[in-house]
Length: 420
Image (tube, rainbow, N blue to C red; front, side):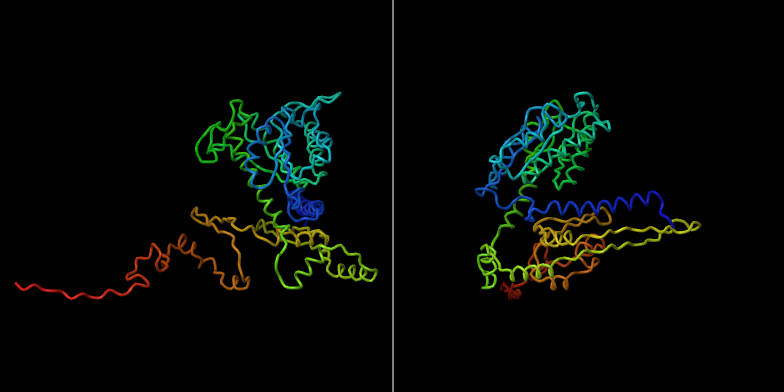
């Protein structure tokens, strides 16, 4: 049976996403698995902040936050011009930067002043119209292309919530466009919206600062931020950049000890060799044998019984072929091999509870699997779902046993009577 139009659209969308992901992975292969290059000039990364008036106050707090990470921050923000201005094109501004003015990290924050029309030589494009969106997307893509041509790690910061319904709707529209184009160009999008809303998700001039105190974070115009607001914004961005810098530092680590074979591998990688013709043939043969094979297409069929009176719907799930280069990229990436130690994972339970688990190392994977408990025997399930009382560990504060472990048993003292 032919799937319904809605099902067909869902299947086509899933297929397009998978193929787009494969293309993105190939485009993002720069020779390093870390997002930021691990080998900056002079052992220091340089970060450029590009943007309009909203980005003007971001460089100073970001400089303080990244000082300990050997990152030099330079502001390239220009007053009010955003992407909708025709007299200032950010793509050309980036292209005009001399190659000697090198940077490895780029932060983009624009859009605060982009709610107006785009005025072309013979045409006016009103904000939000299809023609306006098409031209604005072209400007986003041009800026991203110019930044990626400099081999920089790009962080596109989304707009915060604005005062007023019209301004908030415009910011949401722009953020949707920023997010879409960022994902299509292997760019990281930093969502700061929730950091500047109140408990009801609405706009507020005040909010918690980095210390938790409620302070004024936004200016009276409902667009720009106070110094404390920029500190909070810089902290959100700094956490993401520091995480990627840590991955970059791991990328450049070289073992300083090891057996002879490990040290020989390090020395061989550090020396440029010119192999002979036979050696080149052997290397090509070895590389071919280790190459990841393409994954063939594998469509699946799912039968859905939607009604007792109607015949079942047969849905074909299309899984297109995946090139071996894409599979190899996924298998070789550190993201697929390493866990971010210390990160916390959460899972929602019945009754409104949330279980938290911290990622830690395991010396023996087989031992870890052997010791893994079923869900119903896990401590949080026994305590929060079944209501069992968990036994206290000896010596812990909730251990009320007597005598305590390790203490000698009390001896009975003789009762001394008095002769009266």
